[in-house]
Structure formats: structure tokens, C-alpha cells
Amino acid sequence: MAMSVGGHGEEMCDINTTPLIDVMLVLLVTLIVSLPIQTHAVKLDMPNGNPPPQTVRPEVIDIEIDFDGTIVYNNNPVPNLDTLEGYFRTESQKDPQPEIHLRPDRRAKYDVVARVLAAAQRNRMKKIGFVNVAEFKD
Image 1 (cartoon, one colour):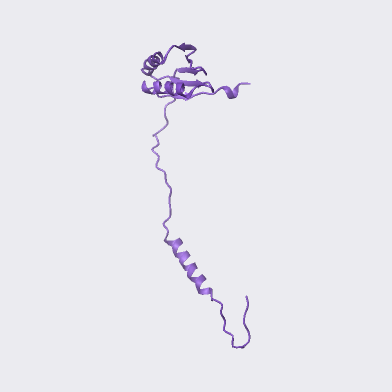
Image 2 (image 1 turned 90 degrees about the vertical axis):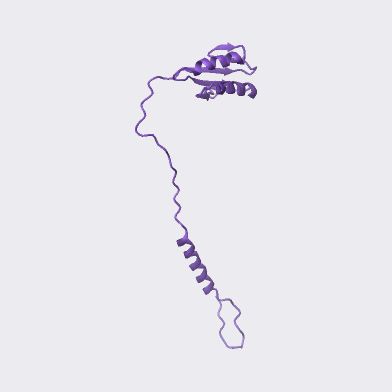
């Protein structure tokens, strides 16, 4: 900081920034105090008590889709999509409903996989999962 000493008749042209800093600090403190405390709460509807352990393991349906569009249902080739829908219709009536483990080949067309999933959804199959065992093979 420079200070002018002497009286050569020169006027000091520097701005006094102390009042500006004081005003800014007062505004900052006022803003911080006036902001409401934000509480980020997520409402969760949790079940009461412990759920009973599952006594009956659901049946598993293995569906494989080959690269050429062949659909294999529990190691049995399916001739067409209508037959597969009939299988889904009978399986959806069971209690507990079987799980579908879908194993599409990585070269399978998306259209065939989408049709199988749509058939399962139309027949109210609820437990559908994709299975990939290629990562675990040597």
C-alpha cells in the first residue's frame, strides 16, 4: 500500500474500499442467515416387521435365442411364437409364477428377442431376467 506524504498540493485519487468490503460482508452474512436450512428427506414406505423367508423356490424357465432366430424353451426347440405364447399362458397361471431366464446369443437379432419379451409380457409373466454366462466360460 502506498501512502502519499507531503504537501505538494496533489490530491489522492485512490478509492477507499473499506466501506465497500464492509457492505459486502454485511450482505453476505445477511444472505447466509436468511437462507432456510435445506433438509433433504426421502419418504420411504418400509414394510413392517421381517418378511417370512421364501419356502418354495420358483421354477426356472430357460429360454435361449440362437443367432439364427431359433428359440429353445427348456432345451426343447419351439416351432413358432404362437407355441411359445401357449407355454407362457399355462406357466403364468402357476403359483408361484416361474422365473424366465433369457439367454440371447450375442449375434441374435433384436427383433426376435423383443418378440419373446413382448409375448411374455402379454401373457402376464412378471419375473424375467437376462442371463449371460459367456463371461464365465474359459
